[in-house]
Image (cartoon, rainbow, N blue to C red; front, side):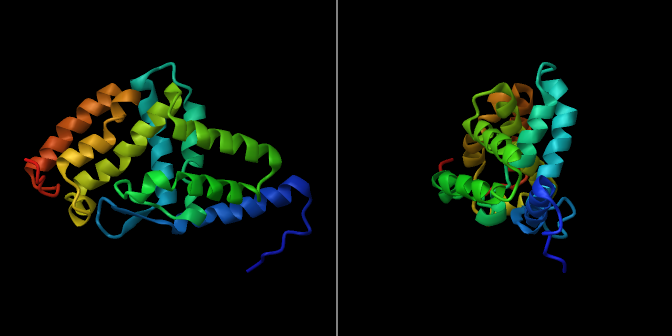
Length: 205
């Protein structure tokens, strides 16, 4: 294995070192099984799927959305997982660990050219703040993508982690904020999944 890029110059050296390290995202395993249930999805696959969703779905959600900007956000949004790992959506540690995840993004970006560092952390912050239309849309499809996988594998991680229909609806309700029509689909499909026993039994029912 060749690890020494010292023969390169300036930004190209930094760019290649960063890209090599960022490739480790392909080794970060998520909680969701693939549609064929052969293995769990990795975070790089998740990010790719989201960018494709953005290309296809953004014009349906709102033709004025800046697709290129959304795709940049989605490519960046999980980079912190290279060092921080993936925390399951329903894990209580997820919300309190955002500072650690942001620090992990900064640590990884320190390898990249300076101009890219600034752009990337700005994109990450925009995604997390969910204040722009593009960020709201990006977060909507970020929540819907693993939901689609779960529908095909019988709700495996919902059942393993004891996630009820009610809890899932509450955790994902901000899909409506970025893509109201998709939220209607989510609710309908989630009810079908509940009827088929894909969710953990809701003890409050």
